[in-house]
Length: 232
Image (cartoon, rainbow, N blue to C red; front, side, top):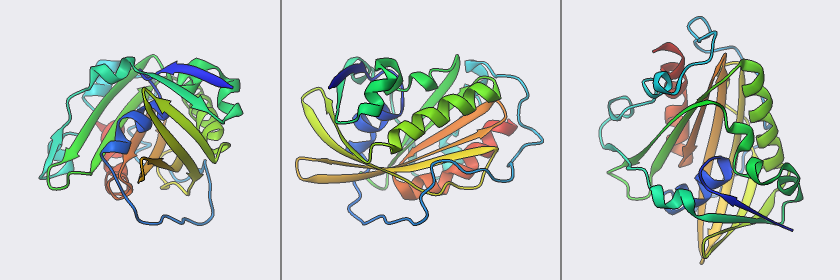
C-alpha cells in the first residue's frame, strides 16, 4: 500500500527531506537496551510552564547561534520542500495512522516553533530543534503514538519527489531529561550513500522539545535545548 502525504509537518518528513543530505555519517551505531520511551527525573521541572505556550513564546525559547557556540549559522527555511509529496512504502503501521499522522499529525499541536542550524566548520553537520506546546496529556499521547509507530517498522522506504530512500529505524535509550523521553536512530540509504540521523524528544510539562540531526550534535545540545525551552 501507498500513503501520499505532504512534508509540511512531522518526524518522517523533516528527517527524510532535510537532514539526510546534510548529516552523512558512515560509522556504525549499535546501541544496547533499545527503548522508545523512558521516564527520568525532571530537568527544570520547577520552572516548566503549567499552561500551553503560544507559538510566539516558543520562538523565544529556541536555541540561538550564541547558545550553540562558535561556527553555527541559522539555516534559512526551504519553503519549496514543504510542498513536495512523499510516499511511504512498506510500513502498514504508518498506513493505518492515515496520511496526516504519517507526517506527524499526532504532533500537529496548536503551538510550535522551529530552527535549523549548520556547523560552518563541517559541511555535513546540521541540527534542527522543534518546540511544541499543548496540554501535558496531549503532548504525551501524541508523541508517544508517533514514535511507537515509527519504531514498529524497522525498515521501510520513502519516495521523496524522485528520490527513493531506504529507511531503517532503531529505538535507543533517551537522555534522562524532563518528564518523558523518546529517542531513535534513523538510517537513510540512497544512491550508495548512508546517513545516520538521531532524533530525541523530551516533554517537560506543557512543552515538547525535539532535536534532530547528526548524533553527536543531538547529544551535545539536547540538554541545553530542554533547559532553554522550559526556563526562558
